[in-house]
Image (cartoon, rainbow, N blue to C red; front, side, top):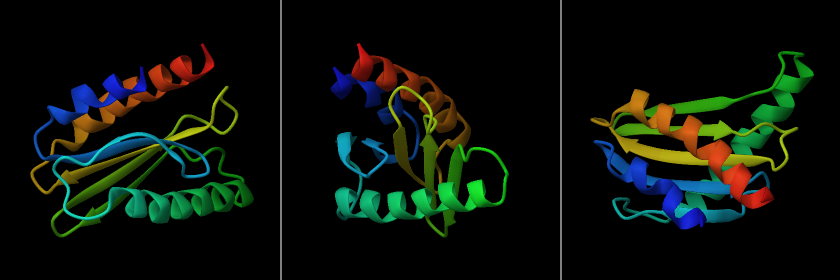
Length: 122
């Protein structure tokens, strides 16, 4: 069932890759059809950074970290969290090129994460 979750993201201009993973970095579903390089390796590295961010935000008493964005000269990497206290703690990872529609990608991520949580807890 999770395989269809990324379909709407794939249609976004500038889309390169996406993954839904558990909070430990295990990839549950992914697509790297437009990405050069190893998506699983990238997800593992960025998930470690995201997890460190979770801990740091908590230590600063700033509530729960929801999103993280990395801007590069040729694109953007977006990460989003379902919520550490959700029924299933998921992270989502999206890579867009410089011409990518960041706003639409964020809107799709906001829809996909609850769907993934629901599918995994059904």
